[in-house]
Length: 264
Image (cartoon, rainbow, N blue to C red):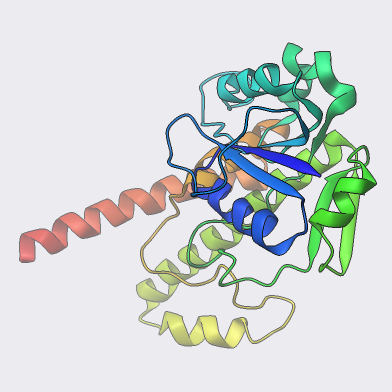
């Protein structure tokens, strides 16, 4: 099987590690307009069985909050060269109305990326024993791309897209909750770390995304995905409130850092 990965950014490098080294594709190649690619993995210019697209979909004002220009360009550029296109870039439901997707929808599947790139959510920190595909991803690719996981989860494009946004929206909300808890403990002179350790000893809560180095979250994935998820819901939703709370926490962090610098 000949596979071409389009995009070699932060997440692209992680996917390259998964697909190129761990799985038995006959030929694995990479192309990127800017980033240097690993030696020996250059694209030979020929047709491929699958084009795995991992280009950036940055935040954008309006619409559903994503800029799809690089993604739609990649689809158009490689649609005539690949039997199937697998999108691993993050999108929202609005992407399903993009002309580039509609034109080739029968040959486009999705496999959302459920790892992150921070030290709390990277592959080194997590053990995720499942993989997610849309129903239309061919078995001949699925079987080689996920031989070591215990569960392969499938869904419609809408289902897997919303599931991916749900993951980051939930985790960001959990982070926000614990950051608010830290402020409550500070106000009452209580040891936040001990409260956190006690509360997260309950396996229903656990300690994932409860740690805090500084107030508020700021990350490439959260900053894109959480507002996109919130835009799907009604005004005044829990996630919308978490976003607003996070803004206050970031403001509090800025004030604290400024005061600390003055003392120094």
